[in-house]
Image (cartoon, rainbow over all chains, first blue to last red; front, side, top):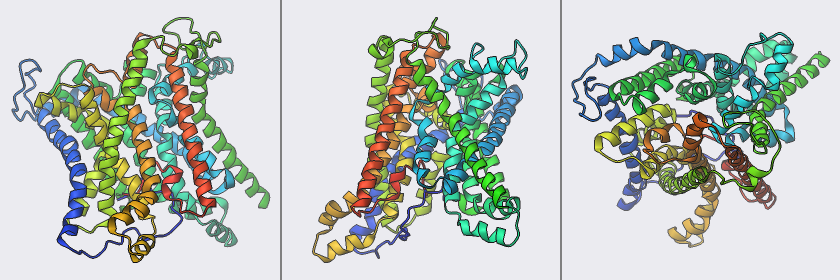
Length: 304
Length: 280
């Protein structure tokens, strides 16, 4: 039941040493301790999901003012898919490309901190989480300044002809993917780091003693051993990235809108609850399908 | 062979530093923009150096109202979520009971569900139950998504604790309550504090779930979202920079404390290093 591996604790104390059930009071105690929290989660996480499911089957001709009737209108699902499949595809496309970029950036970073940083390890870890110390929205807006048409970056890229004289970075798919990569990179790096930190360097030495090239040693030793962190990190990156709409809104245009933008406007602007609920449910189903398909292929059952 | 490995080693470190630069760049920009006098309301470019934004952070009073509201919501949600989550963590680590796997799933699911789904489903619940949305619906939502993170953080600390210390106290005729009060609680406290800080930062920074459940109440992230359409006052960057500095100071303080505790040979648990999410 691990989504993100724990930063190693050092002392290998066994996790649970429950005392043998003693008196009746002790048998009830765990339930009393669990009751308030579990009730909160049931009422405000579990029940709402049921409510959302039934809202997605409301008669689409109703409205918030006249009231909705639950007519088991399963037709809502094909309807919203037909209307918004481009945004769905875009969500998973952008999140997928951002994930590949994040892996290319995050793996070396996690590896360097875990294996090469020595006494700087903790400082570098703080640097990884540091972006999360400022507000998500404020730091996303900072990319608007960095990628601005009048900014140094665009000027440089135009000068070296990587960008046409009137080319832009802001309000393009590139900006949205860059923002997604940036915002969720720490979620990928931290579990990866936790896995790589436990990697015994002597295994790599043994591999090279047995004439493995560095590439072979990486493929046959480092990569398999970092698999739990890699799987957890990709999930922690992909789930929020595919449901995000802040980056698309702030760094993109309606042409870059993801499914989150559509759901937001369905609930808060158009007040079309059946449609918004059906889209939300489809998003969750799609993410669950991706997650379980991926976990099965990755073959690390202990992760979930 | 040796040379090539030396190069490869350095190469990984250089790439890592470049990536850290990519992560740090927006923070530097936010700090820089907090000293900016923008040329127009909708301009995001650096124009002219000024200290005005720092002298008058509340020049736009709605923004400061929103910050205060976010702090209030964060505080209440943190207290409730920390209490609920800590109780659950104790039950999970210290007790054997039926239905453990069900509880584990209930704690795990909110962390794996997209925020969008949690936000919209709560909205559907509140609307169908006729609950007017505002300050308290935001608090309810924040407690809901913070509890799981509190549970995993406190659990990690509790699981890494040496049970023999408590057994020793009991052997020395401490009552159960005394043992809890004098041994268990002080040892778990760093984990609880870390969990509370995590809960507060999650609550303070949440936008997506809040946006669906706020009614007309405006938190700081919602203020920024609205202002992005109308033009961002530069004071937003002052708040962003101040948040960053405060968080950095807290981390620095806790690592100093941890170092001192280690020198004094006290157990320093897993919660010290700030694992963002833990084993559940």
